[in-house]
Length: 179
Image 1 (cartoon, rainbow, N blue to C red):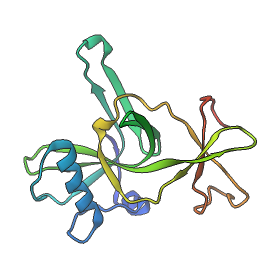
Image 2: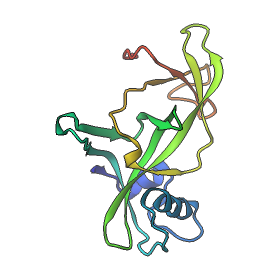
Image 3: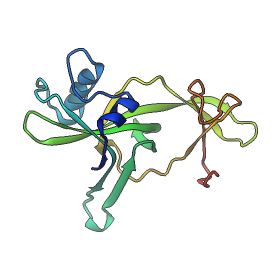
Image 4: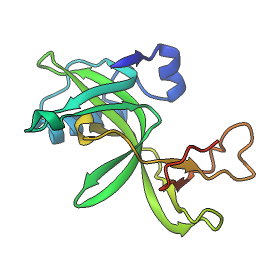
């Protein structure tokens, strides 16, 4: 874990530092523990620590093919779901101390969905972001470095940054750097 967030950044990103029964993130974290780690006990420790980046190694049977993964907040990732690729953007990376006093890393994701439309100028598929619901997943759903690129589909309303009302992105299958 690298680049620990301070309280100001946590507040800016709209995430919670302390769990309680009233915030939705505690329920989502409980579900993530249940799904990924088969832990179904009450959450005793209530503090979350957020970071800018996580790096880890995915171990393979053949040590030569181990994969070093590095992911950062704001990156788009692809996740294999039921023989299909799904795409998400990393909103936050955090760790939580479980009841066994071990630290577990989690991701808060916002998911892209295919609108079924294509941009007339670039020919790229247009994706949109689903409404954010603080979807929490274990970091181990990512088994390779991100290589998916989405470019914000700017409109006239995008001045001095991106318009909050425009959640459209173009899938950049050509992997060139946009300037």
